[in-house]
Image 1 (cartoon, rainbow, N blue to C red):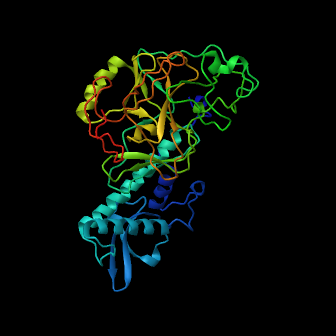
Image 2: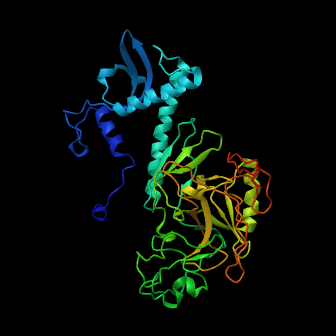
Length: 411
């Protein structure tokens, strides 16, 4: 039996830091974990729980990482080397004092409710950092994701990050059978490249910016094309390339998304990704979501209303993008490895230059100008995402976008 186990290994469920904490608790040195007699009694601050000032000396109640709350101790400021944690503690304290008492200078002693809030805020930050790490571990795109909440104590969402459609029961995505043989898809497209083969125009310029009017479909090169990864007709398939932040809005709109980088006009920003389901299943789920007060159903009605994307539980960062009646993102239907016109990929492109720090939005009831039916078969009404109402029967919902052009109601 032992011979059969040679070369086998078992994954440890504890993290590196947890194992180090166990060594310190047991007062054991472990060279493999970097725990020696010299640093055996080096303790790490997990977060700060309370504050007081005695004469001119500041003290902090410290929760030590790896130790229970009962082992927390009061420490003078000069003993603490955790500059980042100290700054964040005082930032949270000042913000909450302004909210409660309209002052920012801390008292000599914190009342229990204020101290408890600071502990909950510290725990929330740790939970959000773990969530942020999980999201980044699952993303396959270049752009990084950060998470911020400076508004309330709301924490991570029950949400599974995916990078492409998750196909629901009874639905098949057929892979494309042929690809282009172009030497240069932009400047010397053989047979019009992939867009020409589908009787459509090349979508991008040499900077990867979309040059088609909204409503026209985009046909990108696929896995069977002879062109390489750097082909100018491969844009959406490369995924999100900007660093983005999921943040808590301060005006009651829940979570939102803002860009951490400048985005040029007509540049691809993200796809709307979720679980592809039938319209019948969407009707069933929509009734449940109505009772819960939220839904993320997006109709794929390019040629006919047969399928819907549900991003309520499976999705990417587009799950958190809010509505605006004056949005900075425009929806396009994209076809790459699957040419079934009933199952387009939904891509968002910037309608204008978007500044770093600006929130990203799209119109949940987006309308596009009618397009010649010989050029496209695009329906003029995109689907719903993110608010109550099934994909077929709309509920009249008050709009909170706050723009000058606000329609007051979404549907």
